[in-house]
Length: 474
Image (cartoon, rainbow, N blue to C red; front, top):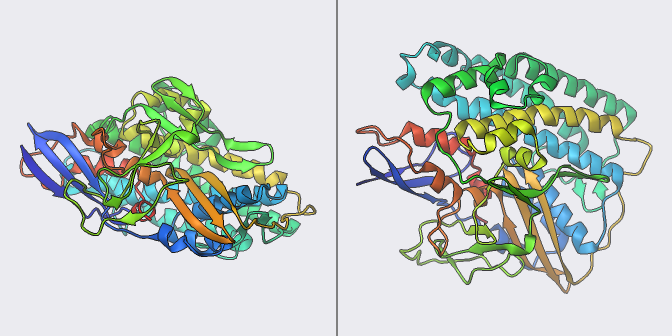
């Protein structure tokens, strides 16, 4: 057996190292290390509750609206209120735009460029991938960056700026869009649809969203989606990185009549609601002090001695003692999309990437529908009085999956603030039972060639999870 230390990874948001044990030409065990301690949870203690709206979005520069949504929801729960209905719609639209931007950036800038590597030069598809996805030069990359920038103009219009907007509040949003604003936003969304249909899908979004089986997926022949399907199959990466078959979603985009994508768990075909009381963060293999706890009682005390049996700053969240994968694929499995359900058992690289592509199409359709429902003459913000003592929880879905904020307030100041981010779930270390986290388990069996010190298979699998390591440890 040999040991490889892979990292730091490029084209990953934040810092990541993975230690691999390799035997007989494949990974026999993997240990994911989040090597950067951020300390945001500790920063929150003693601050005023509203400071959460300013501080927590700074956790990340690409998921900041997700953090804003979770913080605002936690404060609304603390106060026992719901945001103004039209404000909830605008907040959901802002969140959708950020998540869609993340999906398209991941596909074009983070994931697909791996197939432009010289190791694939002898294949009949490599030239097309080089033209589309060569880092810094590919035509797909350039168009994606332009389209993403144009779409994020909507966030500037409604949120003042991106990232780190303060527009999303417990009572709604700070800006009332005019009828003219809604027309301009509609034109921007239509331009983004044209981009997706011309470049990413090579066909109507509704047609891709209607795919209902693996056979229908493999028959798709348009755009970069079809190129990915061809490349993943021909390179042997499609079914690498199989997960446990357990998926979880906290539910995405809360609106007055419910969440656009509902919450739940899926355990190899068994559906259940999320039992939030059963969440516990294990710290047996994390450089943290204290005891395993639910986030309402959890602490964030770094182990400055970095004890030997631990290997990551990331805690190990578990739901009823089990690991769950979270992300776009999980969301669509939970809501029952037939293609996502068909991909659930496959649960590898192709499944995760297609999950994001599917959600790109579905969310664009939902953004257009949501925009049509906004009533500019109605109120978008209610005044909210926060109590001096109490607790609150805000759960949302970031692009990469389930995100939760838990706040406790005493005498008008935050006494505890705990955050579990999507990558905390997906890239967790082992727990006290020795159970590997989702990405650690998915890497087992990945092929490693003789003399390969940074296995390409490992990079494909890791990037299929789209880790946001800066969100992972607070």
